[in-house]
Length: 445
Image 1 (cartoon, rainbow, N blue to C red):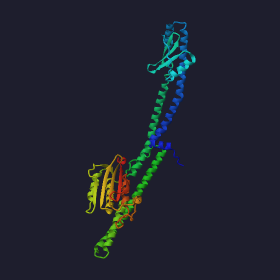
Image 2 (cartoon, rainbow, N blue to C red):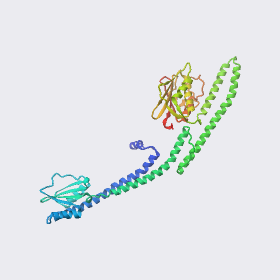
Image 3 (cartoon, helix red, strand yellow):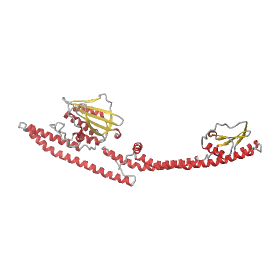
Image 4 (cartoon, rainbow, N blue to C red):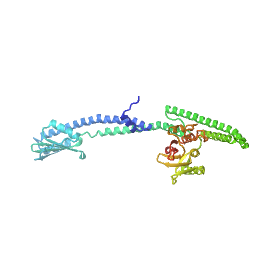
């Protein structure tokens, strides 16, 4: 049962999709959480405990000096305080601690304040100066204020950062080793995915070998066997249809010659028309079988290619145009002959049902789009998916008197799949069918 919790949906959108990034997070997250817990629970308590002990010791020293100054010379006490405790002591006569009580601003002031309240009844003030690494404590006595300037290290645990440094260094070392090994484990999966993607668009990676963990090797072996079976199937399909087409062409040619010899016979034209239609259907079958071509990828100037197709496809009763006409040259790496066959097939399909054909070429950051529109009868929206299937003739919406085998759009779809593109159908602004071909830039390697 699928659980729809909003927070999970948000995390799913934020969470990276790559296996390598997810694996890194799985490794890093526990380490970060563990360090956070150690820092909060152990170090925080450690700092508080050590600081409390140090503050208690300093307050005891202050209390001792205050008792001694009642019966001894202050200069001697001040000298001994500097010598043995590194505390600067002086008496500010005729001074009083202000009544504006200030709340402790940090752990040092808070801990000292608690200890002074516990052990002394005198009014006091505390000022922690981290920049100067000292703490000033003023305590009110009968003849003024005793000012104690104490080094900050006497009341605060300053060496705990060493533990943090070692913890961070060890974590970085562990993560570096984990990332190195993880990279080696992820690379075979990435190579397998790249090989599968390349084979899907007709680009077979040479010298692909299974590497990595046992499970990845098994998946790579299964992929290689699957690739061999698909290639064998495509080869058998091509050979079968090529053989059938070749075997049928000879008798069809003989029939056509015999009909032309008896051109004056009644009904000869109808028979000749049927023979031509059969020959055309055989050629389309052969085209359909040859869409998975072994043609090598080359750089293609798409604008130049379309201009050449338009110039060779023009007819007196047909208007074929490319808009906009001031297009820049768009380069794309693919199977040139296959793409040319695809566009020619779609243009011929548009010419069969319309008088005006409009071709558009556009490029953005993600893909290149080629659209071919006509002013024919078009196709109902519910039949778009059906029209791209092999051997489908939509006689209810297209002219059934036109010869065809129902392979026109499916041949183009097969070719686009073989070069990594896609075809979509929609309603044309000319009133007929609009065929949208998309070529993704990410596979244009």
